[in-house]
Length: 439
Figure (spheres, rainbow, N blue to C red):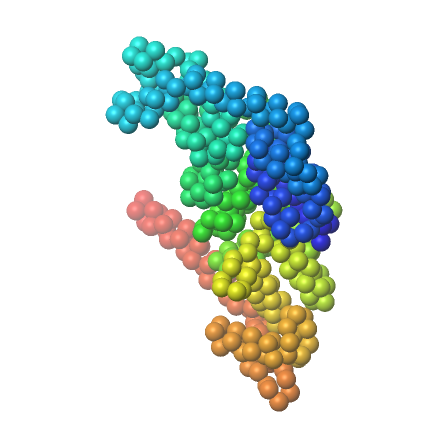
């Protein structure tokens, strides 16, 4: 299933620190050789300050206790730089750790700058050093400290570009700490800036939207209201255009969210339209399942794709989250997706057939006969489906009354006649009243 792995595409739109959880997942699933994963981690770590972690990976990769001299020198440089930043930021960090002094800050950033300069000799250079310190802490993997310092820096910063960069860093830190509520707040704050800011070019704004959507996947598939959130964001015109322009692979996550979200079935038609438009630039078993079912009415094809969908979900770092319950390990999203997908197949099949063989339907649902019969029985009992099961013949009989098309046309014409009469009456009566008044 490595052919359906999106890690390489997703990683290209993310901060390198956000890629580590994806590689950890792939390593656990053994989707690639362990050596490949370790080499990928080592390449990522070369762009960070997490030298100790890089040393551990090097030892595992080469099965040795020795590390290269350049790693040792790199570690010395990192420690030296960290100490220098500790000293340079000591005054402002001391100020920010004093809650009584912090309460003297105001929303007016210019006032804050003057107050810090006059009373504490903390100028713009020290504030800028706080940003460098926060970024350095982030690159060292100290995400908690980085998040705090980036938040404080944004409260003092007057440079909009720097403030935006700090917000991206704060979002990444909250994601990596799995603070989903805070991360969602930062995501919404960042979206508001991206949508309202005057970028140097439309392409720059487009790229920021693409980054935002990629990072948002972490939040939307972990936050309790995330499945609504991804649908709300990705279906906005500007973001949907960004997906179709440069990130059609995100349709996998949008499609999954729509399938498992029973309250958002109304978005299914729009989703199918987009999937059709992008089928030549991107497709995977999840998008193909929906296309087979709702465009081609190919139930055998949908059945085959559903089998592949299960593997795609299990091997996707965002969708295949596992939960241990005692001695059992479950993948909740997989179970929800299969349940709803089977319901889609069942409903679509029932729309075009009056008498359905349960044995044949069980094959299309990838279930045993007994499982399918019980599943259908519960579905009929718990829904408004007008159907009954004939256990003797092993069939499901749909008893829905279909309105004759001629009756529908006649009824529509009746309504049209009534609306026309009322419209004419509303026009004629005031005119007649005006004529009588004129006399």
